[in-house]
Structures are given as structure tokens and as C-alpha cells.
Length: 323
Ligand code: UT7
Image (cartoon, rainbow, N blue to C red; front, side, top):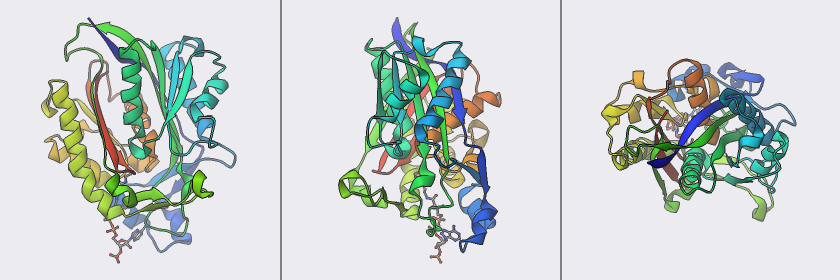
């Protein structure tokens, strides 16, 4: 038997304020048509004043607990993937721990920008496989609206805020690639590309900074690296793209999502797409899409899912799991 990390609950939270593309036309030389056709984004949610990453993360986690029929006392660890924590420290994860009323276990953040959720899932799976934890709440939560340069039309129209959570539980499975749970992961980064997507501020430079991106350069890396990491993770699980029921990709750009599916030889009928409603929510985008995909009735128990993401670093990776 093999100890696997199986998803037993999902939840998500989106801030109340919805901003349609057309709203940017008032302040920027842009159009709904450009944003829609170049990125696939139609609208995004922005956090309210005072609403923080850990507020949203805690709400998503509460919904995942309710979905699983469990309480915070049943959780051993919280991992939050975020690049936009409330404070420099403590971690957003410990703030979620406090908001959930958890006084035991452990909590920490993972920072791998848009690939953060894939990195967090991989870490949580290892904690479960090694016996260090039996139930891990893995959350992706971001307030990217706080690091936008509202005069830069090349970035500020693309990002949004939100949070998604998966509750993973240790379950003994037969030890084949038909098992439920996380079957394989693949993580990569290459710091040579650190200037393609970054924030020009931070604690040790004493500012918050704004997101800067050479979008078309990131785009060029994305399709190739995403299809490759997804295929590597599938290969590690002894599976191939033809076994996949759902690609649940990082939601940055519909053209990247389509290009990756095509490169993997899969149809868009096998892809969960939420980019039109959420924009790019960085580390939150995959758990948001998983939770929404389950709510829509797309994702069902037993489905083989591959998630993949790329972002600042560049950092990228994929996780293969059976729901
Ligand atoms: O999540 C982390 C990973 N990030 C990504 O995956 C994002 C990857 N990149 C992208 O999604 C796309 O590159 C963008 C959506 C950011 C841009 O699309 P593109 O087709 O690569 O456009 P571009 O950057 O090459 O720009 C084309 C033109 C430029 O004008 P000129 O130089 O051709 O005159 C831009 O100035 O579009 C212009 N442009 C805009 N026009 C209207 C850029 N942003 C806008 C805008 N509205 N908002």
C-alpha cells in the first residue's frame, strides 16, 4: 500500500467587487476588445479596502473544511502559496491558522509566484507521504491588485484577487497509477529569466514595488515549458496525455491555455477555464479553477487531472493527481 495525499474538500473565495474590462477604458489607452482577444480576460475581482490575503485564504479554507465535513481541529498543517502576504511576517499561513482557531499543527507560506500552488501541492504531498502530517490545507491566495502600476496597460488589466483551497488527506492506496491522490509532481525554476517578470520593490529594498512584466517574452516560454512539465509529471506517474480527463492550468491567458492543450494533443473540452471571470490570480488561480470546476460538475471522483503553472523566476511545474 502507498500513502497518498487525496483531495477531500475544496473551497474558494472571490472578493465582492467585480471590475469589467470596459472600466479600464476610462483611465487607460486600452479596450475591452484588446483585453478579451489578447488574454481571454473579461472581468476580475478586486479585494475591498482593508481586505487581506489571509482574510480571503481563511474564507476559502473554511469552505473546504465544510465541503469535507471536517473542522480546523482535524487539520495538521496549513500551506499558503502567496507572493502578496498581509505582512512581511508572520506568514499568511499562521494568520489563517489563527483565523480558523487552530492552536496546534504547523503553518508556513510558499513563494513561487504563479507556480506557487503547484509548489505548495508538491510540498504538502511530501509531508503526507513522509508521515509528518495526515491532513494538510493547501491554499493559494493573492491580492495582486496591491502591486499593480495602474498606469501600465501591459500589466494592470491582467491580474485579479482571490483564494482557493484544497484539503488533502493521507489515504492508503494500492500503489498504482489508478490510485486516488497525488501521483507525481515536477518542479523547475531558472533564475536567468528573473527580469522577465518581477516586482521592483521588497523588504530589503524598502518599498512595496509594482509588478513589471515583459509579457510577450513570458508568453514564449509558457507554452513550451508548460506542456513539457505536464508531460514530465505524467511520465513519472506512468501515464500519458491521452489518460488525462482535465487539464486545470494556471489561468493567465487563454491563448497560452489553448496552446498548451494543443501541444499536449488534448482538446479544449478537457480544460477547465476560468480566466474570463477571474483574470490572472497568480497562485490562487489553480485552486480557484479546481473548486469552480468541481462546482460546475466538470471534475468528478476518479478523474485524472494535470495542473500546470509558470510565473516569475521563471518558476514552473506540474502536478498529476486522481480526484
Ligand atoms: O502569470 C504569470 C505568467 N504570465 C503570463 O503568462 C503572461 C504572458 N503574457 C501574455 O499573456 C501576453 O503577452 C499579454 C496579454 C501580456 C500581451 O499580449 P501580446 O500579444 O504578447 O502583446 P504584446 O505585449 O506583444 O503587445 C502588443 C501591442 C503593443 O503595442 P505595439 O508595440 O505593437 O504598438 C502593446 O503596447 O499591444 C499593446 N498593448 C495594449 N494595447 C491595448 C499592451 N497592453 C495593451 C492593452 N491595451 N492593455
